[in-house]
Structure formats: C-alpha cells, structure tokens
Image 1: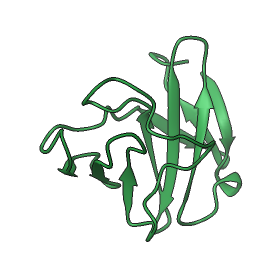
Image 2 (image 1 turned 30 degrees about the vertical axis):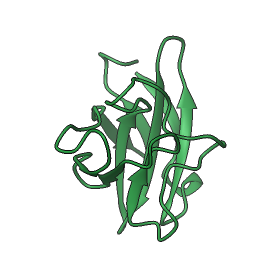
Image 3 (image 1 turned 45 degrees about the vertical axis):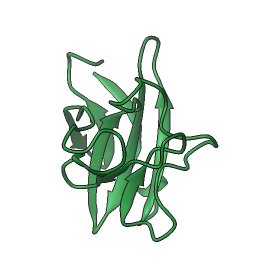
Length: 108
C-alpha cells in the first residue's frame, strides 16, 4: 500500500495533488471528508490544474478544470457544467490508517 499524506496535510476546503510513477491523483477535504480522484479531465484526459494544488473553483464548492472551466461535484466527481456534462472523474479507492491517506493495493 502507498501512503499519500496525513489527513491534516489537507486543510478543510482545499486540495492536494500527488504524482505516482504512472498516475497523477488529487485529494480534496470537503465538509470533513476526503475524496480522492485521478487528476485527469474526462473531456481531454489532461490534468485539471494549472498551478500546484489548485483544483477547486473560487468558492471552493466544486472541482474545476482550469483548461475548460468544467465543474465537478466534489462528493461524486460528476460533471455539472462544461464540455463533459454528466461524465465523471475517476475516483480512487483509499483508506485512512492512523490518519494517513493510504491507497489500496490496485494503485499502490
């Protein structure tokens, strides 16, 4: 298993990106919960952010693709606005072990 970070390294209402050997991921802490997704817009398979760890819209209520402006629900990854409406981000299975965001075997 692969440990990404401690849950406290992601402040509430922010996101944090991670680069593994072959995959880019990001985690969002929203309303006390962690959500983990592949860092790839379903519209063109490109990273969502232009600047490190900038995955959320201005109000910090949606995940936003910096290239196309698509908006995704944080809790589900479903696109609600932009060129990929009703498509979704790929969620990544993880668990919390002693506060550590830990990938499950298929990713780690």
